[in-house]
Length: 324
Image 1 (cartoon, one colour):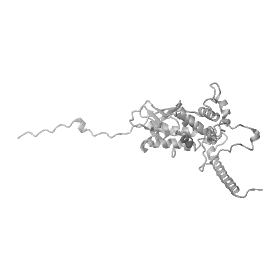
Image 2 (cartoon, helix red, strand yellow):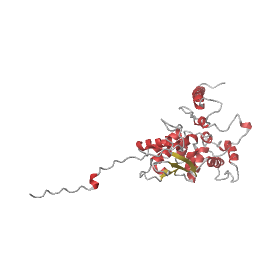
Image 3 (tube, helix red, strand yellow):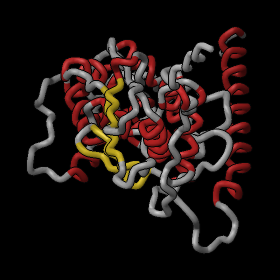
Image 4 (tube, rainbow, N blue to C red):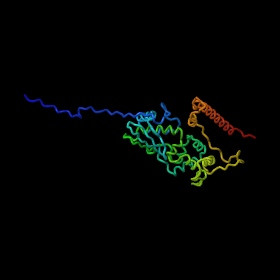
């Protein structure tokens, strides 16, 4: 009888089934930055929503969900701002936290000067901005200046994380961006600083544009910021398109030489971010926003109704016969 041929020995590699890829789990921590949002929408103000929307256009839903979970679980250990850049440490699956850097491409000095000139022509918008509110017409101002405040293209964002993930935007960056949105809720000027100009630079730029100069109204190096803020009202009363400051004269109080700027009341619910910024009120057990929010909305609705009624009355007077 002949020998039965021996079967070739299976190699060790062939015997093992391929491992399924398992996503790594983050090391839990109780030292992270607390997120206000635990469910639903992550941010509240319209400008922070614009920031989040720009982020969500670049990233897959699954990665966005993991980043939100990281942010809400407190995996972001620190969040700080340094000269137009946001730095963060995020606790991932390794013992050493990952380092995240987030920035925006800064606007050129020429672009900012065009923005300041446009804002000087819209004192109503400048006043809202300097009061800590982002006016809804801010996009129009930047568009007229041939610039953009919010990121509209991937190259506007400068994102980096030292984790081993090969994708451009990892979950550590996403978590940091969501918490940055909460920071924008409280401080809309953060977006300006990421673009290269903070509140003091905007104020100085308004002064330059209002005076028609290119540095004559600049704040001296030794001048305190509070002194610059004291001239805010004059700096933001520039004539529409004229680029000059309107003189303050008591004799002209009832006969202003220039019409006041048009103010468009928002047709949406009033923004309560300033009220939230006040924080808890020690004398009240109830939440301040929940307590005063309905009153704010009621007053806004009444003001809008009165505004429309006044406009309708003025239109009727213009169309009717003149008074003797």
